[in-house]
Length: 269
Image (cartoon, rainbow, N blue to C red; front, side):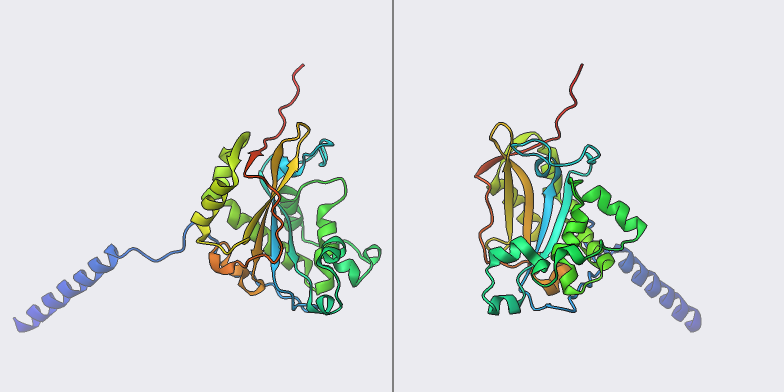
């Protein structure tokens, strides 16, 4: 009898433990965040202070006072695209008193003449992915980004663009990006958009996120890009606030209110 009693008590205890486990919600990251690491190191000139993750609002990025700056095969989806992931000035250029504006203009050409460089060799799946995300400008924007912002750092092109596309995907999955998509064709406020982004990321440092606007043919300010200033060793934490830095430069040129443009509707006969 005692043996049966002990077995019964053990069974009851096991059921209780299982019941307790069943009621515990498993800890998992939010669905909007890809928790995979983003290993991205610069074998050369790697002592720069920050990255700028430049994302595009494709209808605004492709539009301007002179009309469409993208090719006829520009995809209409997705609306949030990838421009680039830009390292700031390496320390040797700072010590040589190279102005930051010169770095912005020339990038890696300060180390290696652009004309001598081949296009990056990328896998077919990544090439297709970038064709969806990167604007189809009149000359290849992927080639331009590699030559200007990647090659002088000795980074592998496949690894670099995979990391940049992953960061873009993380932002595009956030409620703030969904709000932008729902706001296409409407005027919004910069304050509201900033607050919505910080509702997803947590409180950001000053100039952790900045906005770029174009002027359209009607001289309206239209959203074209969103720029995030990120710590080089914290890319895996994006879009958490711990990944952000305050940009050393004020680069936000959007007014308090601006249009989130939509793609022009096809002309009807």
